[in-house]
Amino acid sequence: MAILNENDVKSAFLPFLREFYRFRYEYNPLTAKSSLNNVSRDGYIADGLLQFQKQDNSTFTCTFEASSKESIQEVTFTQNRTLFLWDCITSGLLLTAFLLSILSIANPVWLAGLTLAAKTGLTGGLILIGFFTWYFLAENKKKYRSIYAIEQFKQYFADDQWIALAEDVFPSPLHPYLLELKDQCIYNGIGLAIVYSDQPVRLINAPSSLGPIHKNRKMVNWITDTDLYQSLSSNAKAAAAYQTPLSTPIARLTTVVNQCLLSPLFKALSKNVNPSSIMLTQFSKSYRTQKVVALLLILIIGALYYHADSKKEVVYAEKPTQIYQPENINSNSPEHKDGFVLNETEKPITYGKTYSTGEKGLPKQEPQTITAPQNEPPSSAQSNSTATEFCQQIKQSGGWYLQDSKFNSASAANKRVTELQNKGFKADAFNSTCLGEPGWVVRLDFNQYSDKIAKFMAEDYQRQITASGLKANNVIIKKVPI
Image 1 (cartoon, rainbow, N blue to C red):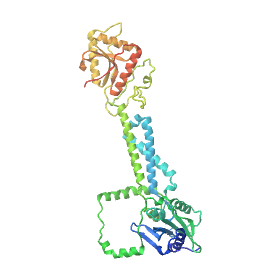
Image 2: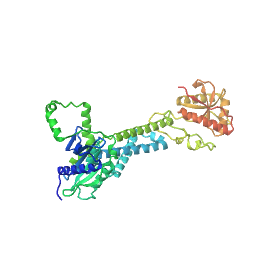
Image 3: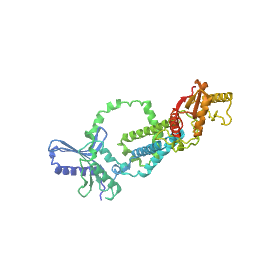
Image 4: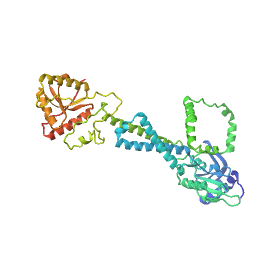
């Protein structure tokens, strides 16, 4: 087996192409043009070029990439680490958004109750779990295998594109790199052939114009490297007069961030790669899709936390320090077993627990009643004094109170309180003069510190009083004047 260099492969493969297309398109040999070592103004390189006019007078362009043992890196795959790490980040954000969506539906109050440090830790932990899950499970996926020659073919349009290999590039027809190269050539519609030193060129697979490689590709103008060097030498004076523009502050800042933060991070997460193979990633894409998806997921995560905080505002409307538990009553209503339900999607709030909100809450109320034992009615002066003091306590507590009824005399108010208490309702009476409303008010339960909770409790008490057989007055929600 003779050793073929890259120039030997080019010289042997070009006659094969002429013979191949002479039977495929039956072109006029006088219109054929071929050249080696071609370049384009965009920096693309084609080891060989063949052009001719077909029978319909359209120009057919064919390019090929020749590879020998010395340039084997052009046809062996390397992992596209940038794409792989972007997918790891996207998978971490996707897992985080998915689990936070479940939490925001199942228990938004718990999610909203987390501190900023807890939210940061939860989000970061979920991102890391998703990141390293994809990192270890998808590291060897074919999606991340990049071959330099094929990536360069994807940058420009040609009617047909070929890869020509020297016979000693791969030692076995079942070599993993050769199998991967063949698979990608078939998928992208690229021709593949092996050049021998003492045998005719062997066709592995012919190019196909139906491959996805031809979508949205541009035509380029090719010239030989000899013409390029002559053009550069004739333009030496103009090139010498050109001065590189000064970098902007943003460009300098981007360079510092890339060198001090991004490059060390990607290097730490990447395997040791041959320095020469790093140059083969020059045709990498900008990964706009991954970046847009990552940005959308970050916005979704932020929206989920905002949604949870809005639920928190419903529960802690006035930032109370306590929610009191009413006395047990004979009712099968689920509201009295599980706490009050704010809406159909919220979980019940247990009575009697203190919810820390970081705010100084309103002073705790101690229930008081001016009702006296039935056998020993209180005196009028003592009743008025106690009711007035109780009114001042209610005024200091603030919030909203539930008014069952209002009377002109203390005896009528106490009678209504007794009726309600005998049925198991928490009720008391006070002189409302200190609130700017003369008369005696019968209050149900304690003051509430959220208008939404007060509205719900008023409707609930209205329904229970009616079911108990007592005279049902309209339960009114009144705000304590400041």
